Length: 183
Image (cartoon, rainbow, N blue to C red; front, side, top):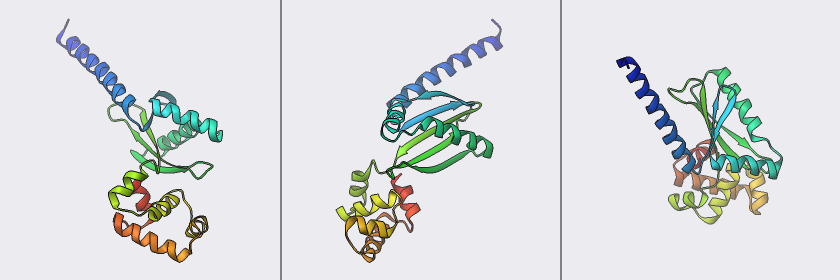
């Protein structure tokens, strides 16, 4: 073996070990992860598989088709990284993060996070009241103040007061910043 072929063999083994290590780590995450190579889906971790099935069963939504379209748009825009939100039919919010995998030609990783899954931790971290959590969760689901007020049976002015209190406690100034903090 020449020194160059030894170096190539060593690099190939490292890449195989890195791929195996990466898969092991991704399989342990609770976040849904999808990896696309070119136009083809090449990996989903267990939470991703469960999410695809749940959305198919509950809403008849084909998440993989939606993600494929988003990946194609991501490639056309030639962005390095993008963050977007999607809403299911029950106003169930999801945060979708697409980014190119460094060092892996043409591979795009997509994470899908269900917003609101960490509401109890969010409540504890910022010392929010039960009512403030209810308001924050409805805001995260994209509801307007008038709908939140009707849903909770309180005045729209009270919603404004709750939002002001939530923003102060969390350290944000807008609904978008609030969603970003929770996501």
